[in-house]
Length: 111
Image (cartoon, rainbow, N blue to C red; front, side, top):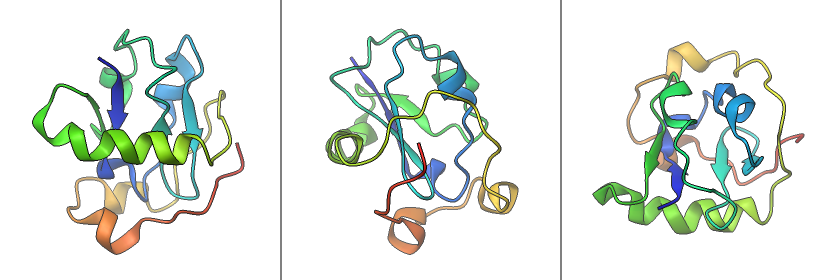
């Protein structure tokens, strides 16, 4: 049961989750993070660390559509292992809906 990052991360990109991950399975896009589902060991320590509540286990009904998205972009984006500041607009976008359709960027982050 890997964990996945959902659209709640978009335009926020808090990295509290990255800091606690024991296997470094987070990857960074321009405006969000993803988890590589084959690297995730299902420990769950990242889930409560996310201020945007963007991380869910793949058994949640809404996780199915995010699983393949996380897989796809974790293979394209750089690995991130160190906590950094959230995006400047994080508090403004925290909790907004439809962020994937309106704000998702496929561009990689800095890693």
